[in-house]
Image (cartoon, rainbow, N blue to C red):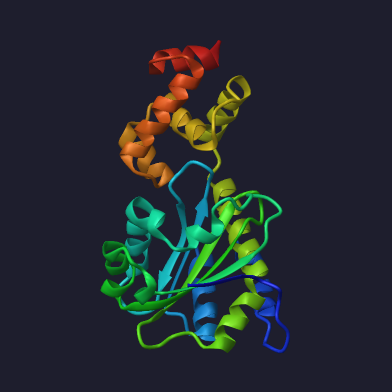
Length: 260
């Protein structure tokens, strides 16, 4: 694995002008596909994913795009999110990194360097991936990792890596904005419930509040898991933690706490 803080090397073509053209698309359904096409044309990547990492939750899939007829990126991203992200070598670099004001990192990993065989198979070799460049940072108090992959035997060149590093901050800012704008477009009664909950229970973590808001809306654990793109067991864990923080034990008690 190769990891370093991005210092914006000179002498390589800058991705930033092309990325600026995507600003108006942030939050739109067409943004992920358009971003991937641009990244594919400029870097030769065949697979692009992006995740948001909160302090105590499984990562959230923000983007999952790939070249070819089969849309495998989403399946791979979901396997990574639900099962394998803890085995990612990038965690060794990001461990202890603050979620605000931190540096931007470029982390390069080859499939052959991954010791965990199930992770290596599910997220690399089974779909023909061999080389990954990960850009990681916290553009808005939330850690985001952007992964660009090439197939085995077709590694990124040094100039490809330099090009990606050059556009790292803009990539992170764009995807952070896309995530925020997409959430804002989906705001509705659920967000009102969550806002009211946090006013009376500010001790809750982000995900605990999300889960409790879903409970108050009458969603099942499965429904909350689908909304938040997390596992059912994770939903149950957050519910247990939230109820313990609030010294309650049921949905009715939660409703009374918030509505009183």
